[in-house]
Image (tube, rainbow, N blue to C red; front, side):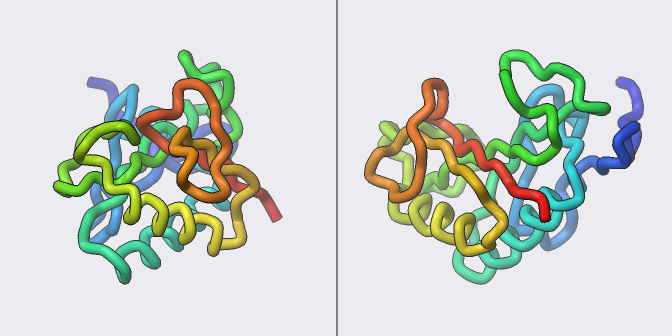
Length: 155
């Protein structure tokens, strides 16, 4: 396996993978952080969200695809090139670090609703896409039954 450079040509950094005490875990393809190069504003958002989530719940947030090094095309995504978009898993009732669809019995709607509320409370977000229509302030987009797609604004 090749070594992942901590910084890419844009000056973006790889999201720290499994840091001690973090309220998040990482997942995604390609693995080992190769799909998690983030704009500094997105890193700030993730750390802020993690801090707030960790104060509210013991389960960890699943942080997935962000962008490839240099903003390369990231199939199958049409986006995920700016370093300002991140996929986040909905919360599972059992706390397992696995995907869950909003139609699955292990999906925790109330906790996911709390997560979405915390996402918006950061004041750093312009859009959240997720297909559970019972969650306020999410936009329905095909292919988003098992993850939230969050877009962060730059200041």
